[in-house]
Length: 254
Image 1 (tube, rainbow, N blue to C red):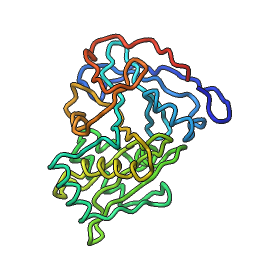
Image 2: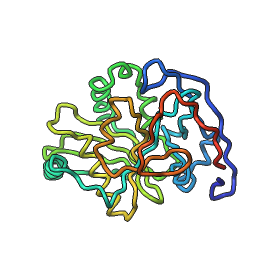
Image 3: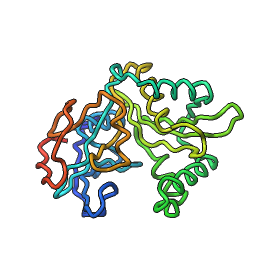
């Protein structure tokens, strides 16, 4: 795959590192060497091959003995929220106001909320996230990225979400929120993005990777129908026997 200026991309395989999702597993990633080449056009294509980005780093899992990480996306027009989800969406839609910010600028208020969220949800990583780490992860992008904040009527910041705009959908990059605010704000963010996809006329909402045996990834199963990227194509058939299988040799041309 070439980008819009016909510059070929080079991929490299990282060394092993501890898996974030499955204890005692070692992970590796296939990553794009030229971060500056990954603009919105290229990234939209890479997403269809199961890639994802973290800041300027674009990658997909390529582990030696495991293929548990599966890229998933919601089929936007076919998603029908259940009764609980409808009630949740209505409640937060009435109580929260969404503001799409003009750029990916630093906001002290956002970083403070992020730190509180990390301390509650990911305490092992909370002290390791410096302002520079936050900026590199949340605010660094060469693609069409949007930063949106959600505030209550008293103007208190309750949630921040970052998403990328692709040619066939949106990609949920990261969402963090006030963990003391009543109601599942993470679920609301997904449904809000799904509605935004409809407004943009794009068919898919990409949710990153689903890991079958990772409890913290189970929430993605609540948004059906999902499509799964496995063995070089997207399908609604959930892949099986994902762990402890040697990942196939990459055959796509990127």
